[in-house]
Amino acid sequence: MDWRRAKSVLIVSFLALNIVLGYQLWTEWRERLNTAVDWTSLPPETLQVMKEKNIQVDDNARIPTDTPNMRQLTYTFKQRGGGDALEDRKPISPAPETRVIFSEEQFALALGGVIPDLADYSYDQQGSKEGVYFVFNRKEGLWPMFDIRLKLYYSDQKIKGFTQDIVTVKPASGAKEQQVLSATKALAKVIEQNLPSGSVIKEIKLGYHGEIFDDAEAQVTEPSWRVLLENSDEVYYVNAISAEVTTEKGDAAAGRT
Image (cartoon, rainbow, N blue to C red; front, side, top):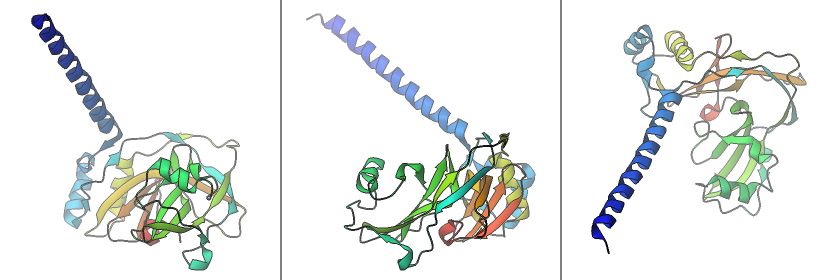
């Protein structure tokens, strides 16, 4: 065997492997950098208000940099999920062995034949209530509709029932897309004008939100930033077009019960 040649091949192979691994790490780092920034990116005047009011941002919270073009949505209900009372829940029997912590594939396999349109909902970790239920939001494109939810109730490590909002989103019909307000500007406004002293921000997330009117057939929801706080059921929504701020009480910050 030509050891000198084998040694050269090994060196080149390891070098190539290191380049590939380095490129992957750099790509992941660049993607993170492009999709989120930390709270220090807020304007100096906002940081000063945070200091004066002792407002903090959770270590795991990130400020998204997305400013996509979005439009107002109109939708109608096909089914309303109801509240959290036992009589409102649809039982799942026998309860699937999801072990509560599940992969997307396991979840679809266990419940895809039970829950309608399951693929149209995305997991809302911050809106879920530990030990009681998971929350999933209906998706429109890439973005969640915060008020349209699927709740999975569990105990003893098994999902035993659910409630679900099912809607039909209407065609655009002339609604124009507009670039949304940045998360930094939305968060700055909430901090400076709305948050009480001592607040800890745990999430800011882009989606759709709008008041639901029981006596109206057609409902309207608009691009909005949702701001959630630690240890608070107060939910702040910043309209991502007009910058208007609204607040709601919501169990586990789900926005509507």
